Image 1 (cartoon, rainbow, N blue to C red):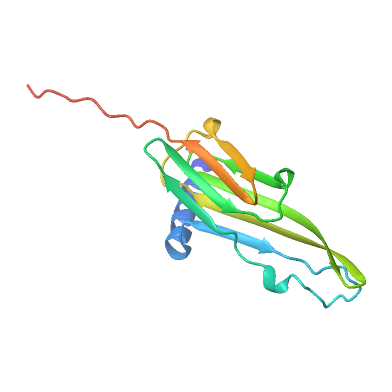
Image 2: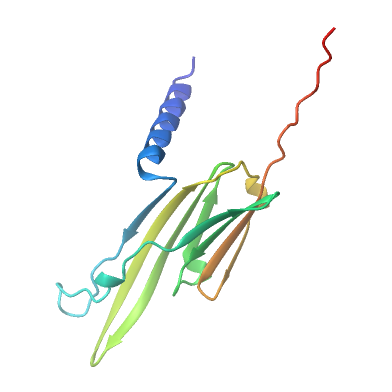
Length: 150
């Protein structure tokens, strides 16, 4: 028996357990202090929040929509498997306040378990006006074979 099988089985058990406790999505948000000269100031402190995210389904697709204001499409990374998607971004900003000028970097990573199995090769992502939309085609489920009883 391959030890990797045990590790994968353990990871699945832990993932299912965490989803049961915390829900389907997981997010990590990191907003460091700005370099405005005062190491204790952080004008972005009240601005750190989870990006609004929605998962919708049609008969043939799963669509993830996420609000990412201020991001540039080159700052967004998307990784997907047939049952999950991870979206991360590092958003750099220059903030001017009166005579001072500073930089801010907000980064986050959000992991979502998808409601249906999808084909990662069919993923299309569009980013427009601060909204990211990721569309994935569902994999076709086997319908099975009817067996005649003799």
